Length: 330
Image 1 (cartoon, rainbow, N blue to C red):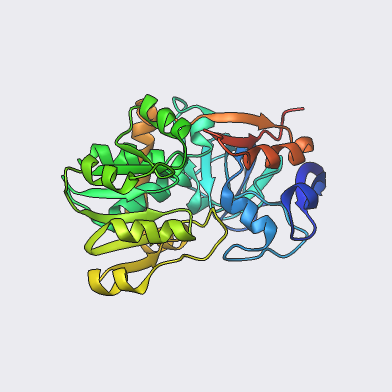
Image 2: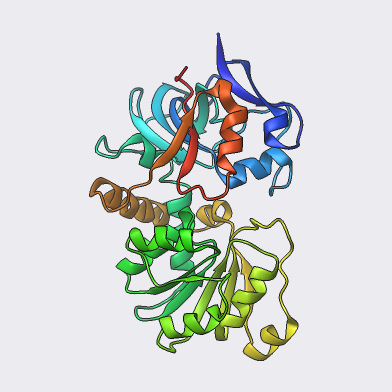
């Protein structure tokens, strides 16, 4: 039996190398489940995988996509903790841009019916990453962190989660429109880095309190700007590279501030912390989602046949929510 899927035949620009095609429905092996996909978001790292510039390259041809919400359709041998018909979310999977995909049974997270598909489809990847990052930073109540590209999902999530811990966040964005969107969502302080004297406004926002950690999602010169904001012995975390450029950081601030620069890869860290810690973090996220505190919308969803339009929309500047694929639409 075949299904519809988005297929990657060669690495390159997403709109040029992705196409919808027929693909055999996968059969779950030992310890696996097959999921009937309801909704699967298009993440930046998904597109980096398509371009062949992520931390791993799948064997081609392949079906992209790493996160989704759906219902278990079949279970493989040795699976006892989940059952057919159960609604689940999963991240770190492969091949979610299809009508069906396989996942390790131990990796799926049961989703309460009170959590909508739009939120559930994004709940494991970015929210879990943001929460795990915040825990890794070890910041305490009353301390301050900074994050650039703050208008995106990670910036908004860090604001939400940090606020609940009493941690201050300075959100850095490039445009006044992005700043207004964040302020309208209740997040602040927000500083526009394209405006003269923005560094002074950061200091005013924190009342002169030190910034103990900074999260760089951009790379290039933006990484060096964050380093300038850091207090002595602060940490600069590389979380992404939206600019596509290497981090440009002067040696002086690193040396004289005795600063630490390190990377954060949520997939690897999620494995390292173990099942008990993962379960605790997932429980916190699902409780926030079920209570309406954590809500993640989808700007537009596309059928698989419109993958070219979907990836173009996913990389459009100024987007305020994720673009997703709805395999059963169309």
